[in-house]
Image (cartoon, rainbow, N blue to C red; front, side, top):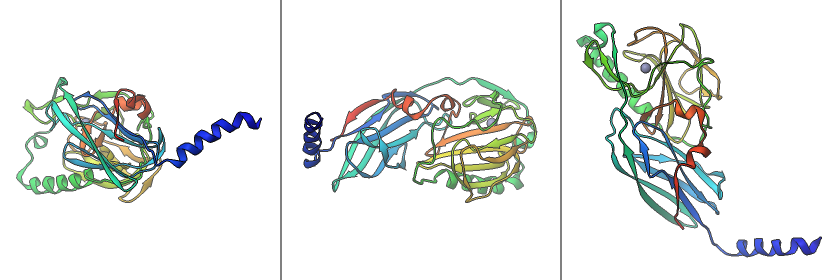
Length: 301
Ligand SMILES: [Zn+2]
């Protein structure tokens, strides 16, 4: 019995005696415009302060048990509204044994054609009256600040829990929208069929960072789930949470409605990754582990 255990014990001691650590980063070589992708840092030894720089934002990651020993997961993406297809640099940094390691690569954001959609709304929702402009501006500032929220630890776990008990899309993310014949920015989320008063639940655990009744978005809730992952719901009738509330995954947050710029009652569901609105739907049927298999791993040390 002892004879069998002995060689294994020697191996463990040899590794423990050396200060040897191996670390890897993982990211996809190319990805579609508007779609979420996964990245990771993993190492055989502990490290601290993992940070990613992507599309001019700095994303703080968490360090957890997993992967080669320790692992940091990231969810990133590009925004159909304001990212142009092309090559973008991604930078990974972390500190290990007193040394700051940096590794970078390129991700090609590939063009993706999203369909056109004609909508008819009240004319004041296409050309807002002058008296509403300062209100719209101050709401944009609040939303901008909420979307810059960058916290750890990671509270998001994949797949997210669908926010409605019954999920039927009525308008997809990325649709190029023509309001009353006037082209406007593409759709920043998914519209889901929801009669007035339908219960809306949190796709991830998180903390409420903003609520309000906004000019275009109507009743809105923004939930921070760490590492730059933020969920938003628009056009709500009743908001049942307030700023600072800690939410469990699947917790009731609101009842849907038809407030703001709408053609009728529905739930608008947005997923922001470090400030970029991505398509929230594909993530519902995958996991971070599955997504990372689509990336390429390269060794840092
Ligand atoms: Zn919408």
